[in-house]
Picture 1 (cartoon, rainbow, N blue to C red):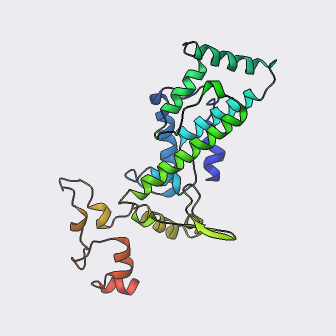
Picture 2: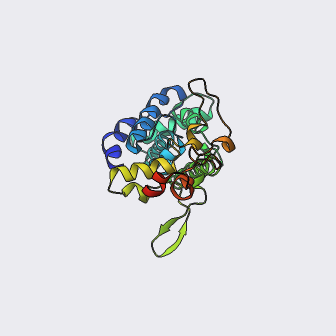
Amino acid sequence: KQLYMARVDCHLIHGCEVMPDATKSLIEPLVDVQVKFIRKMLHVGSRSMLVPLHTETGITPLQTRRFILVLKFLKYTLALQDKHLVRAAIMNSIVLHMAGRKTWFTDLLQAARNLPYPLAYELDPWSLTPDYVDLYSKMVFHCMERSLQQQVDSSDKLYLLHGRKEPVKNKSPRTITLTLRHYLDVKIKDHRKALTWMLLSSHMLAIERLRWRELGRPRLERDHRKCRFCKIVVESPEHAMLGCTSSQVLVHTR
């Protein structure tokens, strides 16, 4: 994560404060770079889901990160004195927007509509103050977290992450949607990769592999993805590691 923030993130957010992402197609190549880097970092394949790339690393989805940085720039300009040219330019943009013209502020509102989740309310040009923009930014981040958590909770691929709570110092464990997970700190690379593959359902067990259509083979429903040894139970990570006794090699390895 430190490598990403130091060497990659700076290029992906360059100039985003002065140029809101009003056109979806223009940000897609940047999002692809972020996704490919995180997948390489986690050692997961191209079939892995997008949501856990963020929930497991604590890296904010790029579209949201760039939008929040624009809001921080807006908050900064609103806090300037009237004599500053930057503030004058932004205020002029807001006035022209309210007069029906397309301006920087119009692009900012379009960038908000382009976010891949609904927001609680739209940015009100009549209520713009530093405190209002700060509250709006927090609302955007909260809506993003709620959307990510809903996608995790509704995914049958990520069932091992359902209901997960993180330890908090001097407090009861609680749900944290976006954070660097403790299992990614495992020192032995092979162990860390195995844990990641299991939790993110990027392994080669039948419960995952047989959901794919490949080499002319149809996709099988979950109940038909049986264990290669016992042929009775669905071949899941928990069955392979803890339950199956039909292979002496597996039992001995366990």
